[in-house]
Length: 172
Image (cartoon, rainbow, N blue to C red):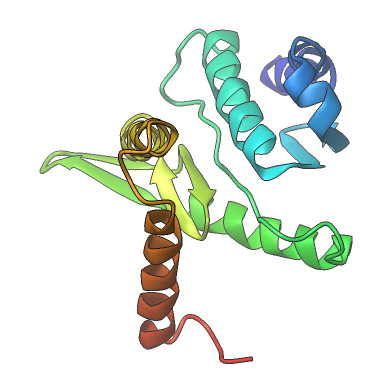
């Protein structure tokens, strides 16, 4: 019954979610969805929003059962990037999320239930929400001209430098 219900969600209800928003319909394309897997391509901002809504709807679908969660990842690549390489990067992002554990307290450790974004796995119910609130605040400051536009590129450059120093990136 659980397998059938997961299949209904990923093969059926996922399409209902996708059709519910012009943002998703106009900017994403579902390549595969079935069982408990899915592969979607599209604009990065639409994909992040879609992933968040899928997670929210999935929680409702499983009646907020904390033992049944979603883990996934997104690979941000250019439009001309080979789709198979992008799929491999997305697969790596998903593996990072599935292997992630988040310590809530000394006695409580959550595993999986994460979303890898820009190479960093984030626990959906805590870390992802914090990152999202920072993103929303930064966008608001940029919109109101209260922060220089170079701020985001400086953060990105710092992340690349830090990642390179740790040895996670290879020079071109």
